[in-house]
Length: 452
Image 1 (cartoon, one colour):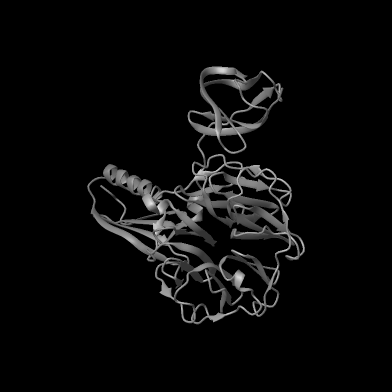
Image 2 (cartoon, one colour):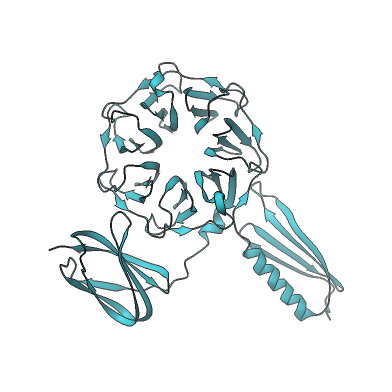
């Protein structure tokens, strides 16, 4: 029997608060979840009769484990897809429902949504949103740029000076007081908050290329053409230069900057990284089991990638490796079009099933439980074979040679060994990555060079 009159027990785990009060004859148990406002909302409660301390402790342990393991994506009340863009101006969250040609607003972290469309064209979708102070800009597919200064309550058109060839807009970027809009026909620039526009296309490729994404790093403006690669301007759009060295696909649909690192998502080719302002790009896709990246989001030093069919991935080491974070996303919910981070919440816009959300701390707290190892490769470069030496004997080793396009060229498994002779076996001259896995879990990669 329990001798104490009252015993109080609580547990904090990320956003979850578990409270158990043990009285002499019964146990009320409450589970709360912390909301963005800081308030705790009760999610579960139960009253139990005391039937023995051992059974009680077992039940408490079960509840704790179940609570912690319940970390996953949850769908907000905006069920409609496709969500082409999400932007945040706290506490306001705006989401564009492309197929429905509607912009929605949530003021309570996605719990409820309200259409905010007065003044927007009724027959074209808003493909991209951007926020600057109290100004909310919308790039439309056919009617140019619109502005709301009252959180979407009303909108007005802002196309003065914008050529009609730039009305098919798919992306918008605000940086340093300037607004860039990307369309089928090139790039438009406004230096006065959208009051006036001009085309800034010098150096850009001719033809119809969709500009899906733009990002900036200081004075450097990057724009991506789907089918035309990436272009850089260092003079506020006055001229542009192609920066595609190292890219294995020119179908670039997502760009993001984190510090001095620029990330590019290329359809079917994965993630690429440049740390020299686009002078060169290297593949940064290890751990990505889906290579069709549609969106990036930055939260501190973490970068998230939204993929078409694979859900969401996180990299906590500047793209060196990625971990899938798609628990709760199944079927068509794995098709992601847009991402946005706010505080400890990551929002994902689905291609079919509206807006989803998940606590960032749930994802950043997940670590790979894989053994670490060290190994050397000699000679490297090599022409016929090379030897891989490990720090100790491992029972289950998997080696994969991967080309710069992310394609596995050679893959073998080894058992109970600490040295492996790797034969060239018809591999063409070039640069490759050697990926090492232990017991099926990714450990490390190193570059290798094959030459005659």
